[in-house]
Length: 134
Image (cartoon, rainbow, N blue to C red):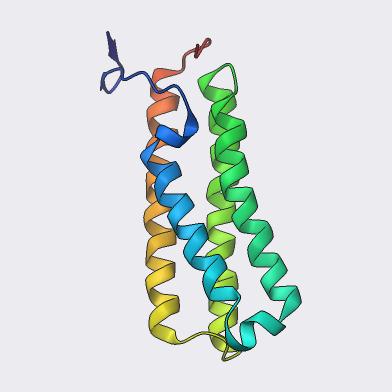
């Protein structure tokens, strides 16, 4: 079977998606970083980063369960926005002196890569535009 972009590969769970795996590792790293040093005491900023991280993963999961490609895409846009928001909060953490510039730069690069992966998945799903995903 071939899709709009080539062969269709059946994926049975969101955890099988490379973007999910990458996002999971990223969220783990961000969570660990926000619980160190002065960042652990900036509760409002830490809670905002946690909420964005939760949103990134939960929208990937919720979207995956949608019945149509366009339904999935709607959630992927939200996940991509959450990823961008994490990048912004990391910049604030650096500006406030909570995190070293090198660590923030690396995390922001990871977030940018995840954003590109989400965009690629969005583009693929919009091309295939299946009205029944399962």
